[in-house]
Length: 202
Image (tube, rainbow, N blue to C red; front, side, top):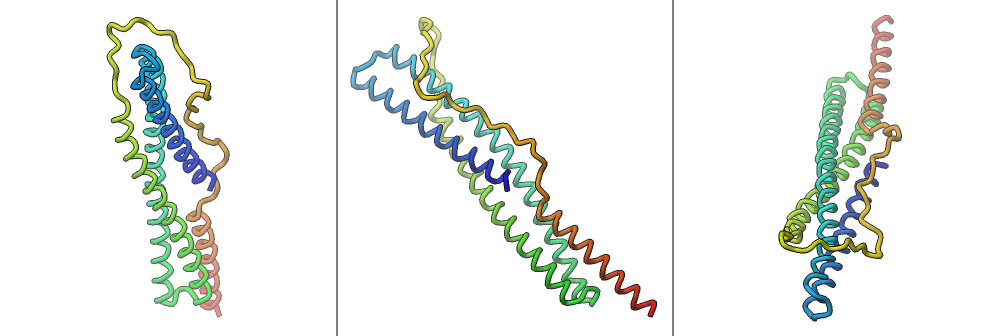
């Protein structure tokens, strides 16, 4: 759950920073078009905004890579749960597992599948939005010719600079839904096997 909250926070923060940079660039363009600042002053500030937008783009790409990895992880979990679900269905039909155990395990598996599928849908939607935003940012960030321009002093905005990409937490990962269900399934299968052995002995 912590990881899910983390990527959502990163996604929201990058969108906010990108929109803020766009507003700054628009305000700067208005100052130039109305003659309130010169072209050289505009270029000075626009260069800083462009650098900030390029940094946001780099962070977006890094987040996209993490999201692709998360997608593969969730798809693998879904596959594992579906295999377990099919296994219990077959064991129920063949009478290898009693009704109570069957209902309990399939209920757990159904809830686990629903939870993971919802998270996968959310991740895929975020990936689509990030991908579309990347295209828009490529159009916004235009290389400027700086060949014959005289060196300009660096100017910093009063607002805080763009935050660096968040570091991943080193806290121990929580047990996944798949791991919990697999442990439960192993315990239940051991119990069924023990009961079968007792019946055969008697």
